[in-house]
Length: 416
Image (cartoon, rainbow, N blue to C red; front, side, top):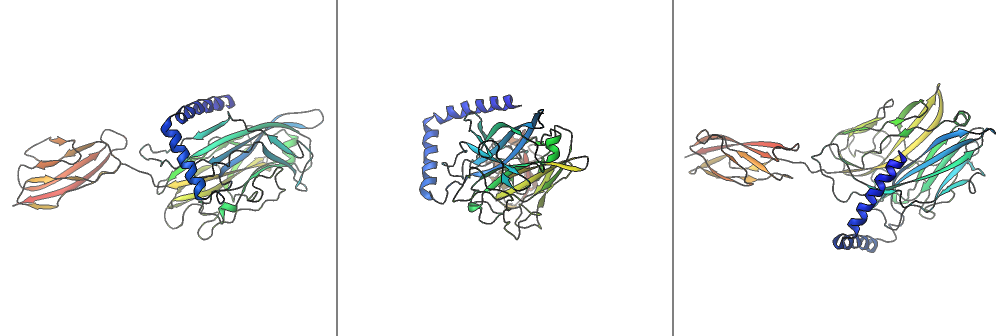
């Protein structure tokens, strides 16, 4: 899986480099960056975090009772609204904390994993919508990378907490208070039982769509796989704060416990993460057994969402993983067939039709004139002369013979 991801990201990197070498793209990119920096260089300081998670895989146990773990952290940054100077950490620091006293251990480098940023392991995600007829605006850009390292953890009563902290979140987030000053903590818990039994954490199979459409259903499988076959319970949870504008990337991270973000309530909260009016649309929900996300967002904007995976073995909680991410909710363009024609027209059999369709490239007009059966026009704004007075139902098909086809009708009454 890792080699496949690396190959895909290398290919994307080559394609992006080719685009960057074009004069127009380079000029446009620098223009955007200079505008962002000139507008608010200080207030945008370090704003870029849009999501992340930490997971672990047990590689085996040693004779002294310790266990070898591979730790992977995935981080997502906003490459349009975020500060272009706030890049991925070099290196990133994952703190290794004792869950008994919430203090740093003496493991790793001063109680932390310092993982270098690999420039080959980064990619810009393509916004993908489930409906091919919807269009994502060009202002959505999410850049991702992952950090990978291994560590030997001695058995420790109570287990460990692995945590990474970074500030700050996008100021444009609507559902939490003061997002510009709100950092994030991405963490995973390794229990005493997980150490004893060489447990690996559950891992999500897919990252959620980075862009969703207002008033369009969310139907997304946010399920995870547990390599040990343990049972998983899914729930929406409140994201954690972490780091601040004074110290945006603490190395090592601050000690737990960590405060939660403050919801911008009302209307937002754990039971309503996306909708400014909880009485319209449908609030975001997750199936606790399958991890399937559903909802219908009714508000355009950016929203922090958090999912917790609680893993159980024989009734005991053995691991907890937190995924913190950002939903971009916006208006999505759809093909809409629409046109204007007079409802009643006197003294002329010739009618001019005004095409008011949206996001369509081709058209078919059916005038349903018995005196001229089967006559079809592909003109965007046709003028048609009917054979006699009477009532005619005119049909316009926008983008015919495509999956995005839409049809509208209008009656025209001709009389003398």
